[in-house]
Image 1 (cartoon, rainbow, N blue to C red):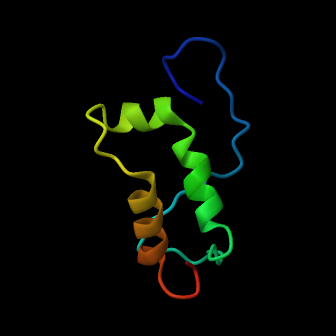
Image 2 (cartoon, rainbow, N blue to C red):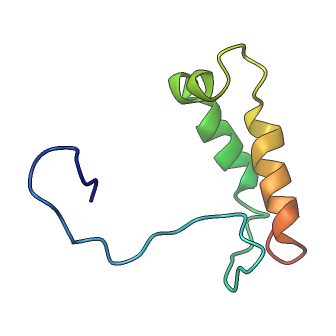
Length: 75
């Protein structure tokens, strides 16, 4: 997957998923699970600290903003 990272090349990736595309054609309503997602992300302190070492990153804002940007019916 990562050329130059050492080891044999691996071509087993069938697809990659991402959020935030202005060309998105698929999505899912997360209304009933968003609070659980926020709580789960908050437990990953090391990940959040790596994103924002000064502690200013807020999982709630990040997830809710991304969900709202997806538009009505998806968030």
